Each structure stands twice: as C-alpha cells, then as structure tokens.
Length: 199
Image (cartoon, rainbow, N blue to C red; front, top):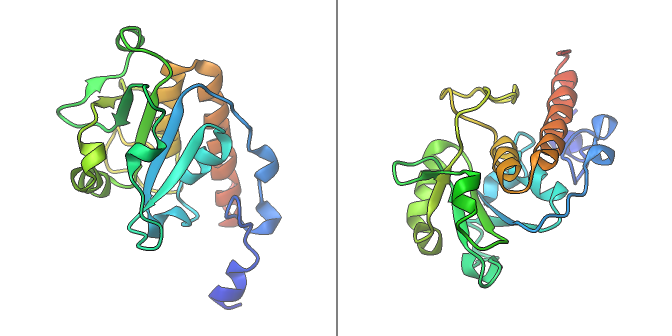
C-alpha cells in the first residue's frame, strides 16, 4: 500500500488510522486559562505531535502554526486582554510555576506553550518578539514522561501534552491534569498497538 493511500485512511482529527481512532475518548475541558500552543507548521500534523492533541481537548485554546507564510500571526492577537501571560519553557530565566506565584497574579492567565524539541522551542522564543518579552515559567520536577512513542534524552523532558497537563494541574486543578494524562495514555496505547506492541 502506498504512503499516500495509507494516509487517506487516517482520521483527520486524531491522526490515527481509522481502525484505532480515539476521537470518542477526547474530552471537552472548559477552562478559564487561555492556552496558546505554537508549533512549527511541519510538526502540527505529525502523528507523534501531542500539542495539537491538547488543543482538541481544551475549549479555551488555540494552535498556531509557525512558519506558515500563508497564515502569519501575531501572538498578541490571541492573548486574553488584561490577563497576565506566561511562557512554559524551562530556561535559566524561568521561575518555578507554583500556586504561591499564581496567587500574586490576576486570573485568568494566558499560558503560551512552544511545541517542539528543546532546540526548536528555544529558537522559536528567540525569533518570536512577542513571546520573547513574556515571563517564563518551568514545572517542578515530577515523574518521568509516560510518552513511549518518542525517545526523550533529557530526564526532565516531557511530551507537550504532559507539560500542559502538569501546568494546568497547578493552575486549574488535578482533574484537568488527570484528564489530559488519560488522553495521552489512550494515544500511546493505540499507537503502540498499531505497531504490534501491547502494554
């Protein structure tokens, strides 16, 4: 079967083969926090991408494609006006995301999440002047990533949806975090099953 024909049998929403489609497992989570995921155009429709999956579950979210010359954007146009904005990125300048820090800020928040590997996201922040000006936050150390589809070299590395889940767990509560982590578990199990791997 050709690659083109095989792709035609892929669900356009969850990007899985139609036999293993899990769209019925994607929850609808209505949050006060505005989540803006920014990913490179070529990565958005990759089956292994999870930032896009997070935005399917979060009603108050948007997915922006960086590098798409036909759909340029300004990040500021998607931020809730008058709300504080935070970029989720582990850099030397980033402060730990904590309830104590959030209590000192006005809700709701804009959570900007660059989506990609370490090198890609660092480059994205440097080149996006709007994103570069926003304060950065990092997650506290937690359990290792449960994302078994891609190999993570850094111990603290997480899939984008895991990072979003843990951040929203602090901002919105544990129910949101659990819902997103359960969604990732479904994606992982369906993907591995399509490769003949069982959990």
